[in-house]
Image 1: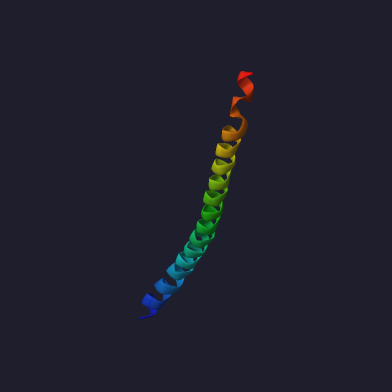
Image 2: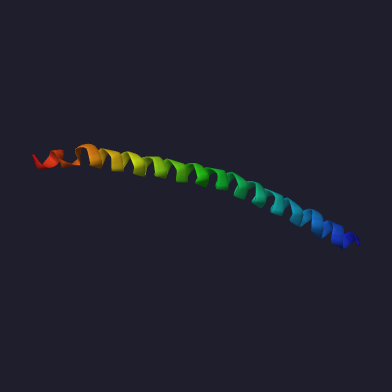
Length: 56
């Protein structure tokens, strides 16, 4: 039983740290996805409005 508790304590810290980092990274990936969507919309708007200026 002592060995089980010792192993549980040693491994649970690693699992908690990994879960914390994954949760933080997921939020940042969501923010990055939203920023890329805004960039795509801005580029489409810019191309639609005046993308032909370089041809003049």
